[in-house]
Image 1 (cartoon, rainbow, N blue to C red):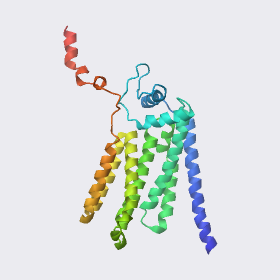
Image 2 (cartoon, rainbow, N blue to C red):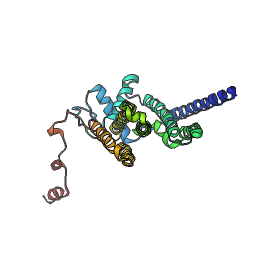
Image 3 (cartoon, rainbow, N blue to C red):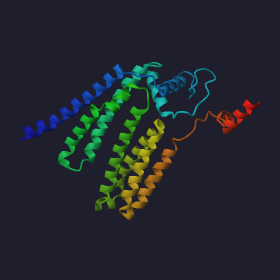
Image 4 (cartoon, helix red, strand yellow):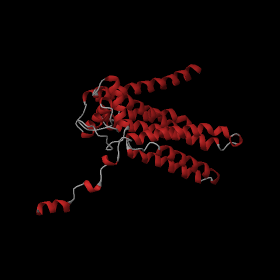
Length: 281
């Protein structure tokens, strides 16, 4: 009997390992054989990353004076700069391999999310295996491993944030129902830790891609609705939301290198009226 349980348990881990190998191999194959540097955004991100390393300026300029820019958030260019620093400036092949590995890790997080969200304890592992299998062979997400764009790190951070928020919800709204947890406030520390991790991941996701703030807002809204079911939890939930929003606000800072003379002004933009006056002259 024990041997049968041991075989079943190890058999599931072998399936997990096999699916991970399939996911990683598939993404590395896609990144190597279908590489694509054509999108204009790819060139912009790469140029900013090279300027950070070579000119020490967050600029998208191709030549001096390398004026700082606000056209892209710094998350993804800094990731590219880190890869270029290790593997060579402009080495987009290394970027694609790194992205393939990141996307493989995203598949694992998807499986973990399915495990936690499956309510039936007997079906949790089966749900995780099914989710991992679907994510491993999904071409619609794997194709982004071949492009120098923000999609791969954004998906990783978004799913990781959902996993952290899921653990925080479990710690907050299951532990509080016990008398022991109500007597000892220290039992809430694990929940606060996971909320902090979720906030960090949310801030990083917004730095990479600004519309990731929708995921943060959805988690905060879910927390608010869940807390409203029990009035005594509303104050704690509201404090958690405010704390996360204040923390995330720290990430939305402009580059200090820009002064007033370098910021674009509306008065400097051409208008239809000014063009008509020039034509009249």
